[in-house]
Length: 288
Image 1: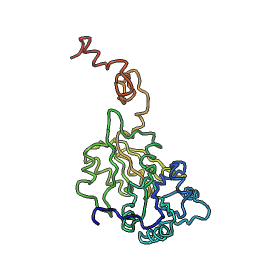
Image 2: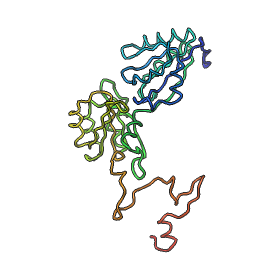
Image 3: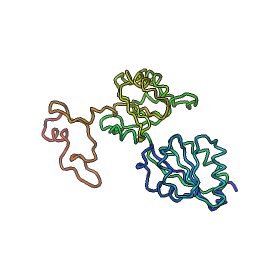
C-alpha cells in the first residue's frame, strides 16, 4: 500500500559502518563492537586499513569489495541476511561522504532488509586534526564546503568550483588530486589570493601518510613532484595557515577569539564578568 513501509522479510541485519580514515584507533567503539559480532564482513579493501577487519570474530566470513560490482556485493549481503546473519559493511571515512551507500540502501529497501548506518571519522576531519587546524576560524571563514571537482563524474548546475569559490569559505576537496593545476587556477580566478594556504593530505592515518603544504601559487609543482594520484584530500583557505596558532607579540593586535569562553560574553551557563572594551569606552564617554 502506498506510503506504508514494508516490514523486513528476514531476521538478519546490515550495518553500514564508517571505518574512519585509516588509523584503527579512530574507529568508534560502536563500530568495533559491531565488527566483532558480525557474521559477515564486507569491506572496501582498497581504502579501509586491513587491521580494522582483524576485529572480526573467528569464523566470520570476510570479503574485500574492491573488485566486486554492486550486484555482487548485494548478492553476498542478501544471501547472508536471508540466513538470519548480521552483515558489517565497512566503508572508509564516514559513509555519508562519497560513500556510494545510497544505491546499496535502495536494494535493501526493496528487499525489506533491516539496516543501520554507523558514522565514522571522515578523512576531512582527520586531516584537519593532523594539520592542527580549526576549519572555522574566529574572525575568518565560518563555513566549510566539502566538494569535489568535475572530472569523469559531472557536477550538478550551481556546484561548479568557481561558483563555490565565490564564498571564500574553507574548501575540502575530495577525489580531485589529479586536477591540482586546474583547481589552483580556478580558485585564483574566482578570488582566492595566490598566497592562500593549501594543504594536501595523502592517506591520512596510514603508515605512509604524507602532508604537503603550500599556497595556491606553489602547491601544484609540489603535488606533481610527489606523484600523488589517489587518496589525497585538498584543503584550501586561510584557516590552514600555521601562523594562526602562534602567540601574538605585544605590538600586534589581539587575534579574534571565540565568544564561547570569553569573560565578556554571557550565555546560558555563565554571565559575563567584564564588558567588552567598546562598551566600556562608550560608558566612560570616550566612544564615538
